[in-house]
Amino acid sequence: MREISDKERARDLANRSIGRTLRNKWCIERLIGMGGMANVYAARHRNGRQVAIKMLYPEFAVHEEVRERFLREGYIANRIDHPGVVGILDDDETEDGIAFLVMELLRGESLHERLVSVSVLPLAEALFIADQVLDVLKAAHEADVVHRDIKPGNVFLLRDGRIKVLDFGLARVLDGQTQILTSQGVVMGTVSFMSPEQARATPGTVDHRADLYAVAATLFHALTGEFVYPARTVMERLSAVMSQDARSIATVLSNLPSRVTTAIDKALRSHRDERWPDAAAMQWEIREAFQEITGNQIPETRRRQLHGVPGWTRPTSPLAQRESTSQAITAVDVSVTLESPPSERSLQVSVVFEPDSSQESLGIPIEIDTSKL
Image (cartoon, rainbow, N blue to C red; front, side, top):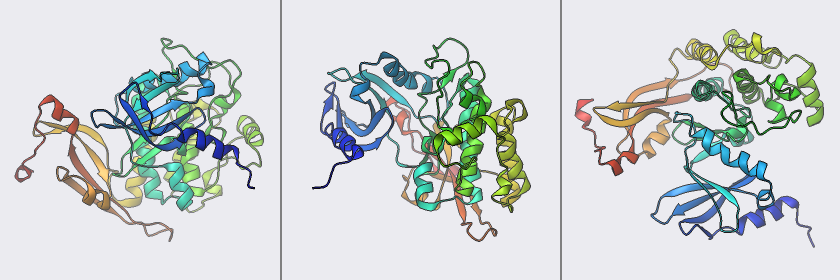
């Protein structure tokens, strides 16, 4: 008789919540993810709206500090005004005292899942994703929020080409108004993408430049399939992060354009004062590299209005564009094909305007006369 693994037991326990109705309004429909602290489910409100429910593991329910850290993800995420941050719609607890967050339901896959299937990304696509992540971080840092756990698993790739930055549960608010829930000397984050100052867990040393380090480490991994510090164990890698300078990405990919190498290597400097000063500076370099490589400006995602209709412009692939609603209006077409290396595939991106359907409830018309475009 086959022995059931711990992972299978955890999944079986998580699946027991399927069909359950929380607070007489959120019906759990299916399990869509399992993390270190919580399970994520697709759910439906009694009015028909689809959402995601992130539910803390029952064993953490009695740990007030863990519960508080879990709930503060919603408070911090909603502090950042950017479409690349997952919207937290509500927080509550189940009838038996388990905390949960109600979030917008995302359709797509994480960058981690993408890399599991393709190993490495084409250069233009990696820069395209990094640009959007840095745009979110600009808004976060302007709100005095440091994410502290940027990694492929926390970068979600929507089907329409946009990205969402996930999990602000480890985020730190720098203005002192929000309590810091990490104990002195406790390492918080993911070692493979963690800056040296974060690895050392020295109080007061982690600021927005730790996030830039993590973006560069994520780019390094997405382009090479390797981590910045090769190691046999997590502890060996942690020790290397704390004591050694990061290797240049050029030691793994010698044919990278020099501008890309510079953008990544500078963000991976051991001393934070030697890195890019902020997300805007690193984003500018990424955009310059993209244009130098492709001959095109990098597509952006921005909130805007068109003929008085609220919505946003967003990048999308041709396939996603065909699958989108008839209300999506193509504004700009950008086709990017890279010649070298041979493994590069075409990055075809269109920028569309999509009306904000959430405004329907406010009585704002969302039809657009295409003859005026």
